[in-house]
Length: 193
Image (cartoon, rainbow, N blue to C red; front, side, top):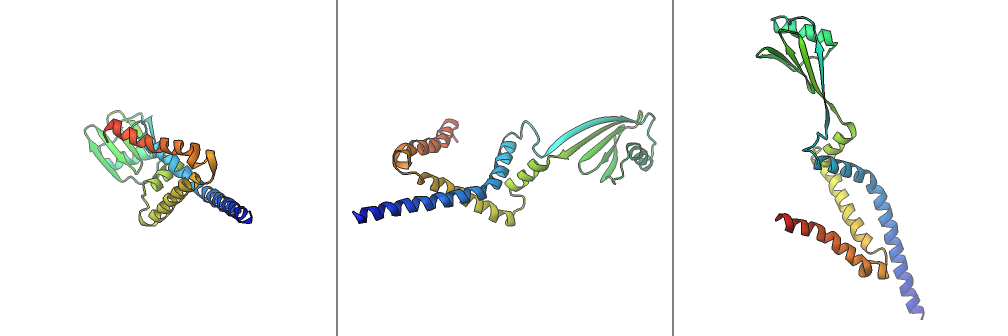
């Protein structure tokens, strides 16, 4: 009798320890889960929007023709718009003067002084999340990403064994696990992937 009681207590302690470790690893994974989830949704829809930048487009009028000299034209345009940043490049293309910055381009119509100001503003959190998710940090970030993936594997595996009996893995849990495994397999079969 005492032997059966000790076995039950051992099982209970094992599951309690598993739940505690599962909980703590889950808490540690929350931050990275948000990063990867937001980035995953963002890059899944890259055809519909730019997940890294907000594109802007505004117009300005100088109200007069632009000088023929590129340096004078550049100075007039930048002065009118109050831009102190030095352009990366200035060149003429047909009847337009192109003034390029890192995330902004000014298209100046020489004859009229009309300016089309096109730019990009970074989406701060989403751009940073994409940078991490797509492993632009390379070697150093790879260790964090691999640790996170190992943590997710632990959470998935430990989660299957946290509950015993008919509500656990060998009860209704096996149907949920089977459904989770079936979804990607059925999709691959349907799309012939």
